[in-house]
Length: 93
Image (cartoon, rainbow, N blue to C red; front, side, top):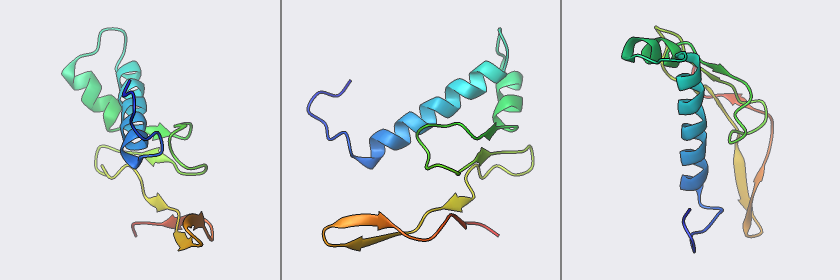
């Protein structure tokens, strides 16, 4: 809990999204997680339900592909605020 902090600061969302993924990996590692089990879980993620990511963005890893997020949403700054435009785009080829 960070009393007095800005709840809209992007670092809070990043931290919560990362924590959600870490808990997910720990759960997938089993009842008595080991280093090897955690690595296996972290390299086989397919999160479609992370509430701290934008709708439609999937966090996915494989043993050979470790860039978990490959989608992005473009935003435009107008009238003093950021607004999304267009749909999700592939952030990597």
